[in-house]
Length: 610
Ligand code: ADP
Image 1: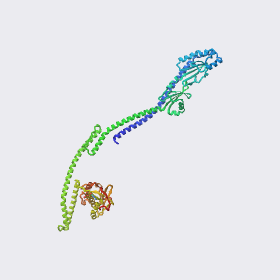
Image 2: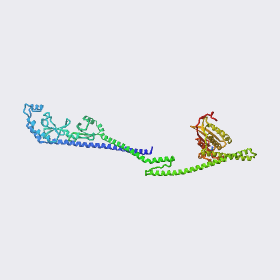
Image 3: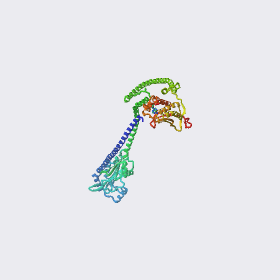
Image 4: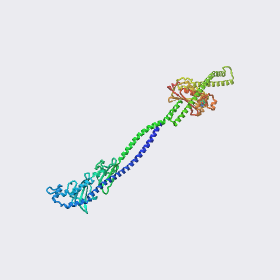
């Protein structure tokens, strides 16, 4: 992942984590606070409502007390009417009860319809602020002496004293009927029945609302009297809900306000618990939406800034790549005014120095090449010049030692043979020098042709068999039944094999053995020359391929050697797209392994051209 993306990812992760933790904490904190607030809210609202209802009711009772119960003039008037009125005859009475009017064949009974109590009732209605809809004053027998609206019957059932000095009953949903006796010194004089429009008293309850779902309900002895107008359900739903209080408590915050001494009512307040949760969820949804917008913005800013921050690093990366590819003239241009800029300056300085050093090195290399070329030219010229006289010396020494040019004594023969041996060594040295300089100058021309590998290995083995035999070394050839043909330069390959097998025999003491192996490995062939000689120390295994390098030990010093054979071998294999490595043989001796591309068909032993 790129550094820039890592930066962005890191920022976003930190942001998200902080946000999620905060949002959870905030949610639970606010939720618990909300529940608390909601409960408190209901408590306060309920107290206010109850007080308001109580106040109205107290006011009503106070008024009634003032106008009727404590009114001595009212009591005196009732007494007066009662003393004036002689009781009806049975007929008149029955007729009145039946038809609620004066019998047509009898004179009217003015006391009942036109007594001063009617005026009194009218006055009360007019001057009190009470929402009174009906007032009926009766005598102790229940006969209506005065009224606002004519009652359906002239006789009303007698009134008994109740616990609260009045009886409550609800009629038509809106009317509160209050009935109470009028007494004097323990004797009942009559009664007053008042009907009050509840609408006015319950106005605060009807108008009550708390949030979206808060409702208030007024109950009397478990019976629902009234609900606030925003209560969507009817009485039945309310009763069902009340019956199953658990359900109610699960989803509603509920509080019951018990009645005070003046009222027989119970006030119940409800508010849906989910209401505030809904608001909370909505709020958090809004926060989330805003957060996402913010996150998007943040990502954009983050991308911009991380690009801005990492762009110098990218330039430096590009710079390093170009440097690695050898483009030393490339320079960084970073003007951030911070550490990046000073780093860029140092890198530019480094590149400049590197460029200078490379220039010097190039110069040196050219000089060295020139020297090397001169040396090669010199060597090849000298070698060339040496080769003919050396061949002549060798030939003459050979002829002389053989007695072909006159008689020579054994002592002379011995010396002549030494001359010939040294001359041959020098010829070989000259040959190797010439070969190496040709290879180095790129003048060795390969002659590519297809030939069986088996053939070349068998020829080599055959050629070195006498040498090995003379030295008492067992030379063997290990080949599989099938070996591929190669497309390569057979002469170069022979030179390589000759070098390796000759070395192996040369460094293996008498009684030892040399094995030549050939095999196919994948799409290549492998040729190994393994001996049981002293081997090559691991630290020398690369060095022996350098020209003139010889392992410093007794066997090397004793034997003839130019130190050029393996250098030529490696150079030739480079030409043939092969490679050579020096390893340790199974018996501790040297193992040279050559790998070569095949590029030819396969042969069997029978058609293998051996
Ligand atoms: P030369 O054999 O003429 O000295 P080479 O280039 O062929 O030169 O070999 C370089 C050196 O590598 C040798 O002098 C010898 O020390 C070491 N060397 C090569 N082949 C063997 C081998 N088969 N066993 C041990 N040492 C070897």
